[in-house]
Image (cartoon, rainbow, N blue to C red; front, side, top):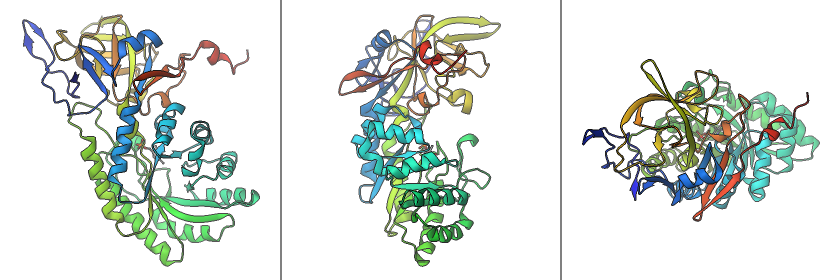
Amino acid sequence: MEAYGGRNPQPGAIGGLRRYDSKVNPSACPRPFVYADHRLTCSGMDLAELAEEFGTPLYVYSADAIRERVELLQREFAGTPHTLCYAVKANSALAVLKVLAGLGCGFDIVSGGELERVRRSAPAALHEVVFAGVGKQAWEIDAALQSDILMFNVESEAELDVISQRASRAGKSARIALRVNPDVFAETHPYISTGLREHKFGIAIERARHAYLRAAKLPGIEPVGVSVHIGSQIRSVEPFAQALQRVRSLVEELRADGLSIRYVDGGGGFGIEYGNQAFDPAASAAAYAAAIRSVLNGLGVHLLLEPGRFLVAQAGALLTRILYTKQNGAKHFVVADAAMNDLIRPALYQAHHEILPVLGGFPESERPLVTVDVVGPVCESGDFFARDRTLPELRSGELAALLDAGAYGFSLASHYNTRVNPAEVLIDHGQARLIRRRETLEDLFAPEVV
Ligand SMILES: *Cc1c(COP(=O)(O)O)cnc(C)c1O
């Protein structure tokens, strides 16, 4: 079995045809999507067969790949009391949440809807839920209080007052952390950076001490932690260390003020390699953990982390069938049956996803390489998966896989252009299971009246 090394196919002249370089380094980017006899597989399952059975566009996830990532982080933090609170919004499929809960994960939620997802997939994990979000509504706060979640990550002083009122009414006490905004710059796409003063998230760290002292006097409020989340797809560990250094100072001040702070929530945001550079998740996880542990060393807190992307992105791919190819002037277009409504990351963040042919791939494919735009059927010029990308030729009727689509893929899907959402399959214990059927047009129209 030849692993796809995460490298772009290298053109090489073989008998007049260019072909992929088969000497890719199998460990350069460990993804569960590998070729066996020129057929792309995921955890031993043949993707062309899955596409036949379940249709396209189709999200396919590997439970084993998710487990591997969770276990990596758990191993790295083994010496530190910690809980991984998986960020539900990255991939909120109930079956995926159940796998994560089975590994001992808690959850980071940002809405009452996500709370309900945890209840339906892993009710025992409700006590391991942290609830973030700048706009929590009264019903969401009530539901979280009834579920006795671990902690609210409070994003404003006004929200604190509302939680205090709702908790008092219910005769409950809400454990809270303030989400502090550490004013740390994290090198990532501006839409997914959250830790600067200019962003809407959290409470300015200079103001936090004052807010905590006020919180401590509010009925129904028990300040137990400090939380921070600086953004997403952050590849270097320094911003995490910087942010947590500021959090540490705050915890020490708050303790001096007499508050008993037992949790530090370091948020999520740890990134992955989407492209063709070497990526070693184990080494990355080790560096991330080392940075965090050294900053928090001796503080005596229970560490919470909210990884999303790092755990699930590379465990998933979006399978699509090529509908047409066409040429407009000098441009070649490959029109797929998946579109921006199925996977919006390229349109929203100019994100890169590797694209592989499902059949006839490594190591000895003899497809010519062509420079193409891979686009979807949606009526937007932003509806593309790749622009001017040199890829093995994809012909109409063939299947392609968009890699690293396990996070912020289906969870960001919409019905734009009145398109139904794709089906999702989870491969676990050598079996492929449909975990969400493809929607029908009837599903789409159900809430509407004429
Ligand atoms: C989105 C989000 C996360 C997860 O971010 P990833 O980049 O997927 O790890 C964690 N915590 C909060 C508060 C978030 O908003």
